Amino acid sequence: MGKKGLTDEDVAMIASVAAEKAIEAYRKKEDSERKKRERTESKPAKTKKLLTAYRRMKTDVADTEELTEAEKREFRWRFIEDLMGSAGNNCDRTEKDIEKYETKRKQNLFYVQIIDRAMKLYKQECESSPYEEDVRRYREVHAMYIADEPKTVQQISELENVSDKTVYNDFRIACAAISVYLLGA
Image 1: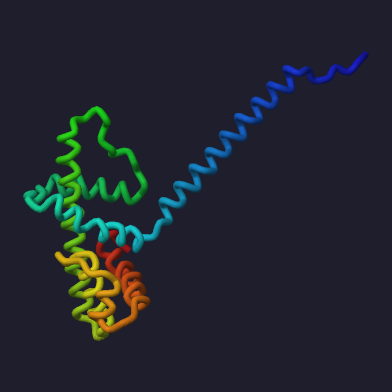
Image 2: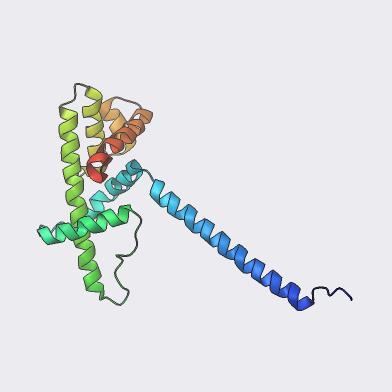
C-alpha cells in the first residue's frame, strides 16, 4: 500500500482557495477599519468641516426660500444618517442634473439654518458666561467662519491681542462647544 502525495492540481487549488480567503479577510479588515474611522471621527472635527463650508453653502442658497417643515424633516433624517456613515441616500446616477442641484441647494439651506441656530445658541452661552475668554472664542469663530469678510488666524490674533496658538486652541474649544448644538452631545 503506497502513499499518494498531492498533485500539482491539488497544490494549485489549495493555493487558490487560500489566496481567496486571504483577500476576503483583508477586505473585511479594511472595511471594518474604515467604518471605525468614520464612526470615531470627532464631532468637533465634523463641526469644523461644516463651519468651513458655511460661506460656500450660504452663497449657494442666498436666494433660496425657507424650507418647508416636510423638507426640514427629510433633511434632518438625511443629516443624521450622514453622521452615522450611511451612504444609502445618495441620489441615483440616473436622476436629472437639475434635481440633484435643487436637492443640494435644499440640503445646503438646511445646513446653513442649523449652523445659524447653533451659532446663535453658542453666542447666548458665551454672552451669559462670566469668562471673557468665552466671548472672545465666539468672536474668533464668527470672524473666521461666519462673518461676511473672513479673517485669517493672524488677523484675529492681532484683533484679540492673543497669540496664533491661542486662536487655534480657542477654535478647538469653541468647535467642541458648538458641536453639542450642531450634532448633539
